[in-house]
Length: 287
Length: 214
Image (cartoon, rainbow over all chains, first blue to last red; front, side):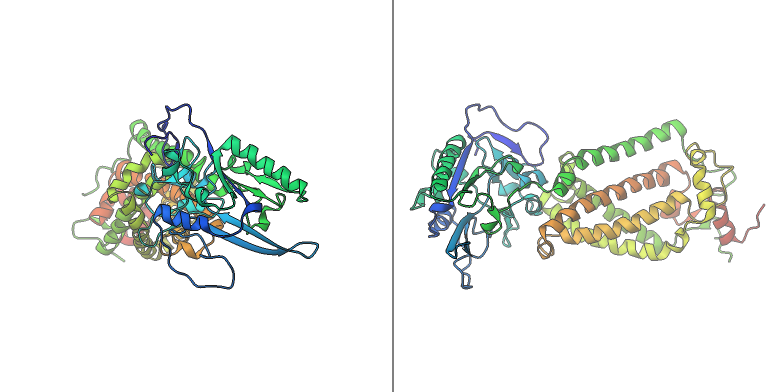
């Protein structure tokens, strides 16, 4: 997307292209209370991105396919639960990349430019630069990226960066029949999400909430949850996702520190040679 | 046991040991180059040594297994001679004499000095850690078998172990090639001079030549 600013670029220590000042952060809002689980979004995603997953097998639940794959960038996660007053509650969460403001995948990626975060907040994998190491999987707090068995590149939801770049809404948003998926400027989506939360509170969902986890700097995909205090109910949505401290250690301070350490060792050796000199072989030794 | 060669040199490594060492050395260079490239973008250009980023990712683990196997042979060959003795500790206390090249009042040591012995054991430990953590990171073959939280720990273990191994090897290369003159030929031609052996490893010298202590 040459027409977009790049805010962050994997394995890059200089400033990426960023002259455009008017770019708006965007967001997708998924209102779980409005989702009917029709999977139209899965189909739209397949169609727009030319993906065709393998035909799986029925396992007795509505989840199909059972997990994200290199061909399925979004899947509906169905959770059946019994409420305190004995009612059945069906929680359906559209799973996929959350487009973190502080993306763990990008932090972990060793290949320059294989992962970029555009000025509008979309986190995108530039597959041509991907080397297939899978570090993005280790970096992601949401377990999203999947590596293709075909080309060993990592894939995930692009938030239809190609559509958004030309002013269109993502394919899943366009197709959603109930309006459960909304797309727009992040500020507007937050306002709209809060309105939806108030509505849910009025209707008895006292703990309804907007899921925009600050542990990853907020996300460009947000949820409206009926049970905002218990995100885990929604197929294990983490309540406080963060980049793992192990990943921060690995890709944070150790990177410059150990690199400088090695450089100093080489310099130290060279300076030892020019200040102290070698241990000469003693004369008298037959060579 | 008197094994003094006709040329009057003292044999230190036979042909098989030398080939073994250099296989480890070559694989180490390729691994350090590609590993550093994955570690910090400043080293990314080193991937070209293995044919680019994707090839570096593909080859790195296979080369790693070769290095581990050949190093394991070295570990079996040399571990007995790398047990740290009391005279090594004494030698260690005089490190400033060693660094400032005041060698004459150092205690007598055997085939390896304490620096070499420490490097040996650092290598034994880091090679094992690198193999175990490396298998856990190895895509597409093995990483899927491990949980993401384990893989994160493995990545840190791999990076820190590799750092220690590279650091030790920088010292090893400096000492073997530049600092201690007359040492490199032990690993290229297999032998050292009498004077070198007497000077640096007197206990070993008397052990292999049967020479009497002066």
